[in-house]
Image (cartoon, rainbow, N blue to C red; front, side, top):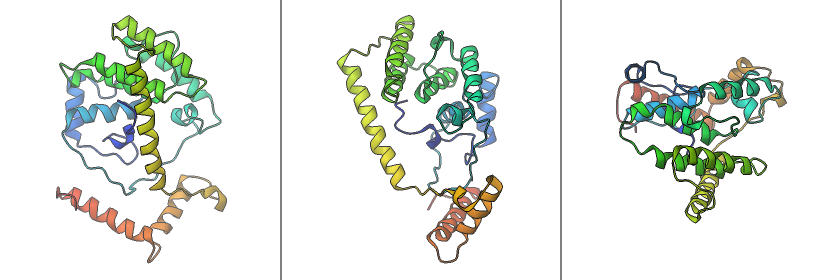
Length: 249
């Protein structure tokens, strides 16, 4: 809920995510449908995590992700020049956001989307203190807000908290300390992620689409004697162990 760890680091139904179908069926039986939030990738991560005790997380890449021009995530986070998906999802938010978070306008915020999915999946976690979770979600929303959006985020979070009697105020020292801790922890973890990752700009070699990118990725993985070829060998070993239900090595 703090936003320090990304929802993509939870088990979810999205690029590179796999889950036993029985878990999906259980979530569906509990709520009458699996996807119950505006952000299906965030919702699936939280819903699945609510129903399992442990999962395997692979640091090795096993999927190639492409971004569509119609992607709402890319449009919302500045990764696309197409603004229409952002307009469309804002309309959906007004229709389908959890009732306790409804308002005339909403901050564009991933932590707020996480809080929405958390509330939408509450039926999977009975007898939970939602007020405490909401306060954490509001603190994360403010902590991750852009400077130009911070004032609106504070106003929104305080208004929603007051309406639901969740006892949250930005002016409190405890809240400001929590926001500072969330922001600090997030940037420390994010710095570690960046240091451990590799990024290739395939446009510089004329790659035009995901298909051509997959050809380049294959060439990199199987480049004899390279670090990535050893990585690919590790990926195959991990997947084999998972398929056989063996403990990870």
